[in-house]
Image (cartoon, rainbow, N blue to C red; front, side, top):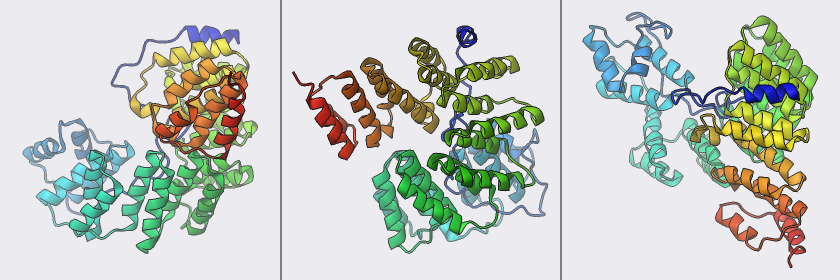
Length: 456
């Protein structure tokens, strides 16, 4: 414990503003694993012109990333006497998607469809990306998106509804997710693995595990071959559902693939931590440590999430020391994990100090709306509620209330448990809950009745 305290005191200056924010779905803060909306149609690489490898310094992909706009990048490329070939576009769009720059990837495809530097072979349904993208950017409702698509004579497709489902899932709007899926069924559009993945994770995050299990079974039944992205989704879902046997089987399958992505190792560690298989998570960590260079903060965050979830502070301290020695800088999610570990071990003062240190990191809106941030913060809320620390429970809930994660009734119910444990009456709790967009459930009313007894 003294080691952890000493390490935390030696915190670095805040990261500069240009440091990328953490991602969405994993506890370590790496990129989202809910399947993202399908990319704009990617013209196959053709024999015409050279293939534009994304790693090349002079590639079109690099040009697009660095330019002030897509149009400026394309004009500069052609001004150098270079033609825009299918291969260039294929690799540029793929690179942008890998870097989560979906908006820029769409702008590239819009430029291609507008300027037509080569003959396009794009099915009509590809146009669905444009109205969905425009409406998402302007915050329009789902009904307006569908109306605009109808006006543009765009036929809805599986990918149309996947985009709409993803929008609702990101808003933590389970009712909206259900409505979009019902619309999809009424339109007789066949769901895909991606569809079921979005549905399953949305319900897992909302702790609706019975419904989540139904969609997991649908993924298993609709799988075509060993698609690594689907296997990664299953790692996440089996972790949520506590299915250790299925998790081990999926990980064994992935180990038989020709190549395992670094992200897959991170997801496996976190998933085994969720099902309580700490030993298995450690084995994977040792494997990474012995065969790969540990260069990512997310890698260290993954094993920290395991130890801190279970209150194993001594091992978390050792990993934190190794992290600093390797040159990897802790981020806001690192400190949030460490705060949870301290609180799980009964070290309330140290937990609060660590939370304060994490606030000095760059915590963007993207991070605050990410699943790792939200779920770890909720676990902090749960622990404050368990010990009846109403003041700090309200403080942590205040952070959660800035996001739409609070639409999930279990989040507000956790705050109510803090009131019960602290034996404090508050008259406007139900009204506040409804105003924040959460619907009371049976547990809510049970907790409110308990709180009533503390009325003076």
